Image 1 (tube, rainbow, N blue to C red):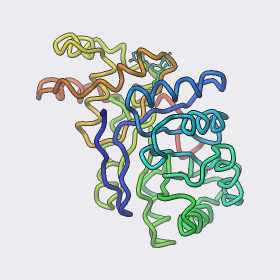
Image 2: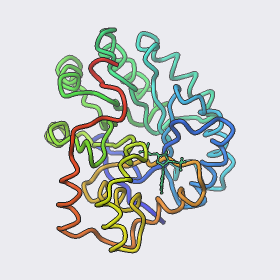
Image 3: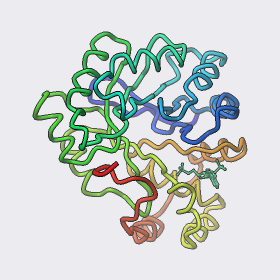
Image 4: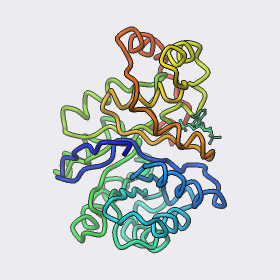
Length: 270
Ligand code: A2P
């Protein structure tokens, strides 16, 4: 077994290591998810945007693992904030599942001014039991504050870009103060962070890869992490992160990689 579950503020729990399928092509998605499930992952993260919910659902349903053991996340796309319940039903239908473990608002899109309304819709979806937990993605502290102040309901998770270049220290402090779990997308910085020489040095010291070092760093920080790969050997490798431990020197060297540079969109303007 590869990952412990961590508790969410609503009483549910989530496997800390999951498999992400952003940019996994439709033709590869079912195979990649099947490989991940066979490798021990019990958490799959997709989104309406990714165009692969059908294939993800097919692989989950085809596996011999019981549905309750697999944690499935999907997300509301930006053009459906005013129509979130219908968008959710469409995702559920594409996945071919009876319920989703976690439904997230993908981006706040502050210019559209609809994310609070969408958040109220997610609360109705959660009340119906069709989504077990609800949260957000790419929300800044100001957006989180508005949700909490205007609805009284705090997201269980905020999934944001997070990797050694962008450790999101300020946002995490807010999350911790409000019982929001931090989840990292592009945990490997789209693979680009892996070229940092210091990671190769740490990896060599422990006899693992740079990707394994970075995933271990996320887990040690308490972050929920969803590395993506289309290559079976990397999918398996990214789950083999429990046989070594980073030391103080490693952590200091990784902390020094912080530049604040994003590899994806800025949540305030996306
Ligand atoms: P590929 O899918 O070709 O394996 P992130 O999760 O930060 O977005 O990073 C994903 C990128 O990192 C993808 O380009 C993926 O490439 C690459 N990647 C994933 N796992 C590994 C690994 N173990 N070693 C090297 N590159 C990896």
